[in-house]
Length: 173
Image 1 (tube, rainbow, N blue to C red):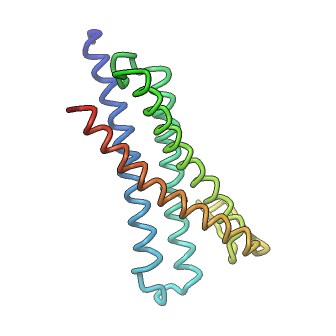
Image 2 (image 1 turned 135 degrees about the vertical axis):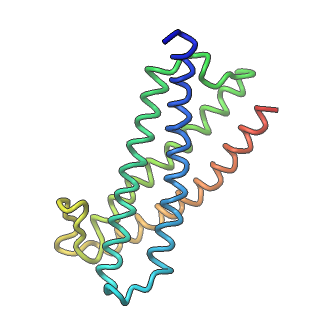
Image 3 (image 1 turned 180 degrees about the horizontal axis):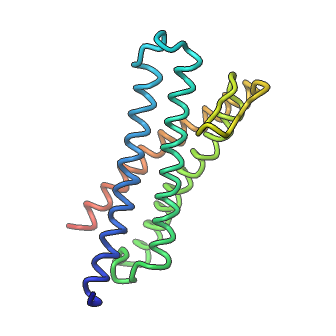
Protein backbone atom coordinates (compact mmCIF):
# COMPACT_ATOMS: atom_id res chain seq x y z
CA UNK A 1 0.00 0.00 0.00
CA UNK A 2 1.51 3.32 -1.02
CA UNK A 3 1.67 6.37 1.26
CA UNK A 4 -1.21 8.18 -0.47
CA UNK A 5 -3.54 5.18 -0.15
CA UNK A 6 -2.59 4.65 3.50
CA UNK A 7 -3.24 8.33 4.23
CA UNK A 8 -6.64 8.19 2.53
CA UNK A 9 -7.54 4.99 4.40
CA UNK A 10 -6.70 6.65 7.72
CA UNK A 11 -8.88 9.62 6.77
CA UNK A 12 -11.77 7.33 5.76
CA UNK A 13 -11.52 5.55 9.12
CA UNK A 14 -11.63 8.96 10.85
CA UNK A 15 -14.79 9.85 8.91
CA UNK A 16 -16.37 6.48 9.74
CA UNK A 17 -15.70 7.06 13.44
CA UNK A 18 -17.14 10.59 13.20
CA UNK A 19 -20.33 9.66 11.34
CA UNK A 20 -20.87 6.45 13.34
CA UNK A 21 -20.79 8.52 16.54
CA UNK A 22 -23.15 11.09 15.02
CA UNK A 23 -25.63 8.41 13.90
CA UNK A 24 -25.41 6.62 17.24
CA UNK A 25 -26.19 9.89 19.06
CA UNK A 26 -29.23 10.35 16.82
CA UNK A 27 -30.24 6.77 17.50
CA UNK A 28 -29.88 7.21 21.24
CA UNK A 29 -32.07 10.30 21.27
CA UNK A 30 -34.77 8.83 19.06
CA UNK A 31 -34.72 5.36 20.63
CA UNK A 32 -34.93 6.59 24.21
CA UNK A 33 -37.85 8.86 23.37
CA UNK A 34 -39.63 6.08 21.50
CA UNK A 35 -38.94 3.45 24.17
CA UNK A 36 -40.06 5.57 27.10
CA UNK A 37 -42.92 7.55 25.56
CA UNK A 38 -44.32 5.67 22.58
CA UNK A 39 -44.15 1.99 23.53
CA UNK A 40 -47.06 0.41 25.37
CA UNK A 41 -45.43 -0.31 28.73
CA UNK A 42 -48.43 -2.33 29.96
CA UNK A 43 -47.22 -5.29 27.87
CA UNK A 44 -44.17 -5.91 30.08
CA UNK A 45 -45.07 -3.77 33.05
CA UNK A 46 -43.69 -0.34 33.84
CA UNK A 47 -40.56 -1.45 35.69
CA UNK A 48 -39.40 -4.03 33.13
CA UNK A 49 -40.27 -1.64 30.30
CA UNK A 50 -38.07 1.09 31.84
CA UNK A 51 -35.35 -1.48 32.59
CA UNK A 52 -35.22 -2.52 28.92
CA UNK A 53 -35.20 1.07 27.64
CA UNK A 54 -32.44 2.12 30.06
CA UNK A 55 -30.42 -1.01 29.27
CA UNK A 56 -30.57 -0.23 25.53
CA UNK A 57 -29.66 3.43 26.13
CA UNK A 58 -26.77 2.36 28.39
CA UNK A 59 -25.38 -0.07 25.78
CA UNK A 60 -25.63 2.59 23.08
CA UNK A 61 -23.88 5.02 25.44
CA UNK A 62 -21.01 2.55 25.92
CA UNK A 63 -20.76 2.24 22.14
CA UNK A 64 -20.74 6.02 21.77
CA UNK A 65 -18.06 6.37 24.45
CA UNK A 66 -15.94 3.79 22.60
CA UNK A 67 -16.34 5.64 19.29
CA UNK A 68 -15.52 9.02 20.84
CA UNK A 69 -12.43 7.80 22.68
CA UNK A 70 -11.39 5.85 19.59
CA UNK A 71 -11.71 8.94 17.40
CA UNK A 72 -9.78 11.13 19.86
CA UNK A 73 -6.96 8.57 19.98
CA UNK A 74 -7.06 7.98 16.22
CA UNK A 75 -6.84 11.70 15.53
CA UNK A 76 -4.05 12.21 18.06
CA UNK A 77 -1.84 9.26 17.12
CA UNK A 78 -2.69 8.03 13.61
CA UNK A 79 -4.25 10.72 11.44
CA UNK A 80 -1.73 12.78 9.50
CA UNK A 81 -1.61 16.52 10.13
CA UNK A 82 -2.68 17.38 6.57
CA UNK A 83 -5.85 15.31 7.00
CA UNK A 84 -6.86 17.22 10.12
CA UNK A 85 -8.83 20.47 9.93
CA UNK A 86 -6.81 23.31 8.47
CA UNK A 87 -7.24 26.65 10.21
CA UNK A 88 -7.59 29.90 8.31
CA UNK A 89 -6.36 32.05 11.19
CA UNK A 90 -5.39 31.85 14.87
CA UNK A 91 -8.92 32.98 15.79
CA UNK A 92 -10.39 30.18 13.66
CA UNK A 93 -8.25 27.65 15.56
CA UNK A 94 -9.43 29.05 18.91
CA UNK A 95 -13.11 28.90 17.87
CA UNK A 96 -12.76 25.31 16.58
CA UNK A 97 -10.94 24.25 19.76
CA UNK A 98 -13.61 25.82 21.97
CA UNK A 99 -16.42 24.19 19.96
CA UNK A 100 -14.77 20.77 20.22
CA UNK A 101 -14.16 21.20 23.95
CA UNK A 102 -17.80 22.19 24.47
CA UNK A 103 -19.09 19.25 22.43
CA UNK A 104 -16.83 16.69 24.09
CA UNK A 105 -17.47 18.25 27.50
CA UNK A 106 -21.23 17.97 26.98
CA UNK A 107 -20.92 14.35 25.83
CA UNK A 108 -18.73 13.34 28.78
CA UNK A 109 -21.05 15.24 31.15
CA UNK A 110 -23.99 13.30 29.75
CA UNK A 111 -22.13 10.05 30.37
CA UNK A 112 -21.35 11.08 33.96
CA UNK A 113 -24.90 12.22 34.70
CA UNK A 114 -26.25 9.06 33.06
CA UNK A 115 -24.18 6.93 35.43
CA UNK A 116 -25.34 9.03 38.39
CA UNK A 117 -28.95 8.57 37.25
CA UNK A 118 -28.75 4.79 36.96
CA UNK A 119 -27.02 4.60 40.33
CA UNK A 120 -29.85 6.59 41.95
CA UNK A 121 -32.82 5.15 40.06
CA UNK A 122 -35.95 4.26 41.98
CA UNK A 123 -35.73 0.56 41.03
CA UNK A 124 -32.71 -1.73 40.93
CA UNK A 125 -31.20 -1.86 37.44
CA UNK A 126 -29.30 -4.78 36.00
CA UNK A 127 -27.29 -3.71 33.01
CA UNK A 128 -25.59 -6.03 30.57
CA UNK A 129 -26.64 -8.94 32.75
CA UNK A 130 -23.90 -8.31 35.31
CA UNK A 131 -23.83 -4.68 36.48
CA UNK A 132 -26.28 -3.88 39.25
CA UNK A 133 -27.19 -0.37 40.30
CA UNK A 134 -29.44 1.15 42.96
CA UNK A 135 -30.01 -2.18 44.66
CA UNK A 136 -31.28 -0.45 47.81
CA UNK A 137 -33.18 2.19 45.88
CA UNK A 138 -31.61 5.46 44.91
CA UNK A 139 -31.69 8.99 46.15
CA UNK A 140 -34.51 10.77 44.30
CA UNK A 141 -33.00 14.25 44.74
CA UNK A 142 -29.67 13.14 43.27
CA UNK A 143 -31.46 11.36 40.42
CA UNK A 144 -33.54 14.46 39.68
CA UNK A 145 -30.52 16.78 39.73
CA UNK A 146 -28.56 14.42 37.44
CA UNK A 147 -31.52 14.09 35.07
CA UNK A 148 -31.95 17.88 34.92
CA UNK A 149 -28.26 18.29 34.09
CA UNK A 150 -28.42 15.40 31.60
CA UNK A 151 -31.33 16.99 29.75
CA UNK A 152 -29.71 20.43 29.86
CA UNK A 153 -26.56 18.97 28.31
CA UNK A 154 -28.68 17.26 25.65
CA UNK A 155 -30.28 20.59 24.74
CA UNK A 156 -26.86 22.26 24.70
CA UNK A 157 -25.64 19.45 22.45
CA UNK A 158 -28.36 20.29 19.91
CA UNK A 159 -27.05 23.88 19.81
CA UNK A 160 -23.45 22.66 19.47
CA UNK A 161 -24.41 20.30 16.63
CA UNK A 162 -26.17 23.07 14.72
CA UNK A 163 -23.13 25.31 15.27
CA UNK A 164 -20.78 22.50 14.23
CA UNK A 165 -22.69 21.74 11.01
CA UNK A 166 -23.03 25.45 10.21
CA UNK A 167 -19.32 26.01 10.76
CA UNK A 168 -18.41 23.00 8.62
CA UNK A 169 -20.59 24.29 5.79
CA UNK A 170 -19.18 27.81 6.18
CA UNK A 171 -15.56 26.60 6.16
CA UNK A 172 -16.12 24.53 2.97
CA UNK A 173 -17.40 27.49 0.94
